[in-house]
Length: 314
Image (spheres, rainbow, N blue to C red):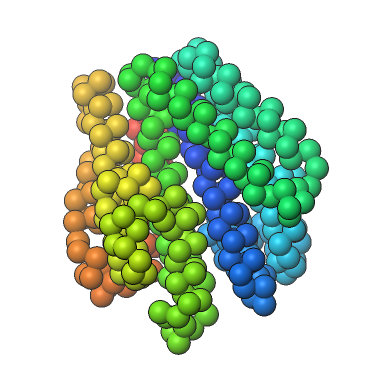
């Protein structure tokens, strides 16, 4: 497969995953803001920080972190190249470049997602309509994912796309966890209070892990247990361990397919071995924020190495 085509499949999947992740973040911010109106602007800023869009927002809109302005910025603002509308357009453009390597069902699902969003986001979304709009974004993403899983050959193109999905998903889960633990909690005095618990539950909901957590741990809300669940629990589809295992598997397939072990495969194996084999208490003792910062750097370095190894840009 040409490097340019592999890169298009990789980025198509990254952008689609990013659109869903951002929709989940907006939903989390909306839920928190409804229950904590006195600090709603601080909560909305934390959502922008999590998404890596805070500086872009301030450049365009200053310090006005009102609900309507932040939501519109993350959904459809032309000043935001990372808005959901923008990233779905990027996904569609990459899908078009790799069109001959996609099944008809996958291409139609991506194209329909783009056209549906254009219609839904033609005007600013009212607060009353926001839950339905976010649900529609997640449903469009699920339809693409279903078409991809149900119709694509398990060949190198499939593995490049899956690499993009799990790289993006790992980045998002790590950022969500870091913002809650490092930025969102107002002070140490609030740890274990109802404010803290509501925020943790919202974080679980934002990664579709609330019910799964309840199945495993019951009603107990514990920062240590939630961090363990989101970092080390290999059966959770959005945990760091699950994502790393899948990236390792996809790179292993490419290694066997091309009969050459890329440096990215060794890096992914090292991530699984060195960063996801420690018990959660050891991670907390060394500093959760420092651990996540190192993980995000390693994940970004892996993405760059994949691009170099497979010559996405000639």
